Structures are given as structure tokens and as C-alpha cells.
Length: 114
Image 1 (cartoon, rainbow, N blue to C red):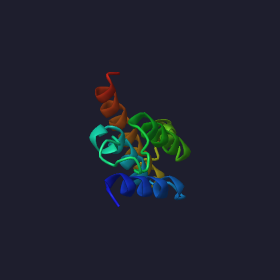
Image 2 (image 1 turned 45 degrees about the vertical axis):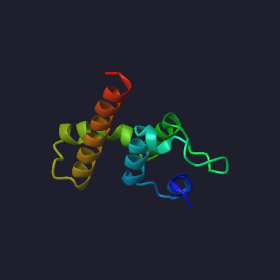
Image 3 (image 1 turned 45 degrees about the horizontal axis):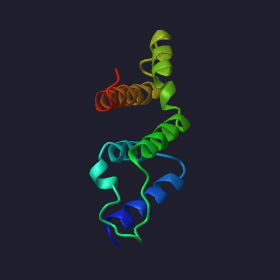
Image 4 (image 1 turned 120 degrees about the horizontal axis):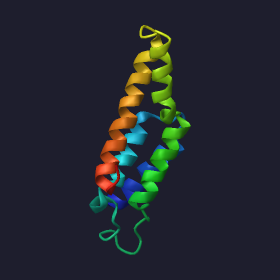
């Protein structure tokens, strides 16, 4: 099995695994920005098709939304406003907010958006 087949198998596994994880989101974002890995030029005619970068990025966004990562900044703000910095959800909301912001900055720089 070549690189294309291995990648296709792992993508199918990652997208079918529940519950979704941050690792899945990170992996899809990383793969979406690395076109030399996802191009299907070395696999021959029988190579399994690998989604292009935009489809991988869309899958990462869909999974992140399913995990409600897009709501983390609001959740963090609410916890801070209510003075719950010692609440167990605070650290998780802080970590998720950092992920959302760093991903936005990375993808904005990668795809030319602010």
C-alpha cells in the first residue's frame, strides 16, 4: 500500500471515529495545508482518491463545530465575567480558545485572509 492508500485509510478512520478529538481537527488542518502529500500524482491509476486541501479543511471545520470549539471564546468570556477562573471548564475553554485563535491566524496567513 502506497502513501495515498495509507492516507485514505487513516482519513476514513479519523472521520468515522466518535467522539471526535482535537487530534483529528489538528491532523485535518495540517493535511489541508500540505498539498504535496495530498496530491494524487504518484499513486497511479488505481490509487485511492484523496480529498483536496479545501475538503480536508471543511471537514476540520465541521468537526470543530460539532465539538463546539467555535463557542469556546464566548464560554471563556462568560466564565471570566462570572469570576469562575477556578471552574474546571475554565482551563478547557482557555485551551480551546487558544486553538481557535491560533488556527484562525495560521489559516488566515496560509490562505491570505485576516
